[in-house]
Length: 171
Ligand code: GTP
Ligand code: MG
Image (cartoon, rainbow, N blue to C red; front, top):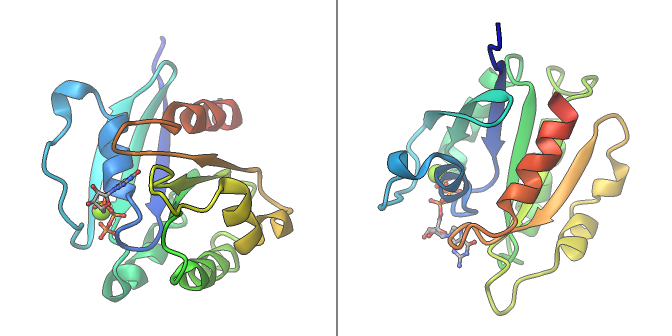
């Protein structure tokens, strides 16, 4: 039959970067929530696109919950990593978490796609996606396909471009 391919996506990044806001925008409008609160632990969201059936693990980015991330690496087929482009102070923390992720034994040697959102591009002092990718040394990622999109998760801008790229990688 025409069953959609099941894809597990892990959504990671520091607290307050906009993960839940992004995932909420990707869901059908009748299932979107108005009030977005900091995630406790994680939430699981499901939605379908043209050819794929997504299960998204929307993880909390708070430091006390980041140790949960690694438990979901094995079963994930793709990663969405969200950065607050306005948060210059914590860019080094985001890089540390990204490096730890990419060096993890359950991630390291896999060709899984990694989609980056340089989110909050609407902020007056937001860094460009090029600047964010420099600060995170994304050019050093050799073993995985990756892509970075500037996004404004509140207006929903830039998200479709990212999802389209993910489609190309997976299907
Ligand atoms: P944790 O669940 O704590 O890890 O945070 P999170 O990454 O899920 O962030 P969340 O989606 O809860 O958003 C944090 C705050 O940033 C909220 O107040 C959002 O409204 C706001 N926010 C999210 N995306 C954007 C954006 O693109 N631009 C602006 N200006 N604010 C945003
Ligand atoms: Mg959240």
